[in-house]
Image 1: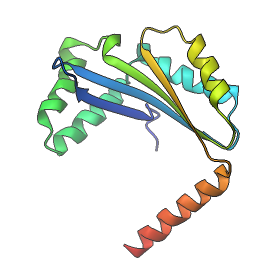
Image 2 (image 1 turned 120 degrees about the vertical axis):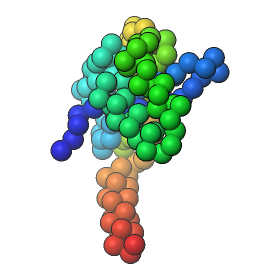
Image 3 (image 1 turned 30 degrees about the vertical axis):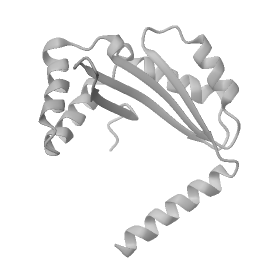
Length: 146
């Protein structure tokens, strides 16, 4: 069952020693449209533009498992003690589509007036559906060979 959280969450220690966070939404469509961009925008705005608490808890747990205790503790402290300021967050709207996403992404980025810095990246593959099908087939075949 999906946790219905942020699609992408990144954490790092910035040059000033403070926690920096990435919150991202990824959308894949054969034909990207305004409704999909709007859905991504709504998701990015949730939690005042910050990564969701459950996503950050999940990331902190995985970091502890990897032995990255310093970074994991910064994430935990941000949630429990220090808080997360919007200036610590950068948002990413990533699209993978068969049609040209530039105008949709430019329109969304120009209209965005939130306080969290936002970037948009669009990847266009003209044979989107065939590419996705081939990627899944390869992943399944490779899993069977393991």
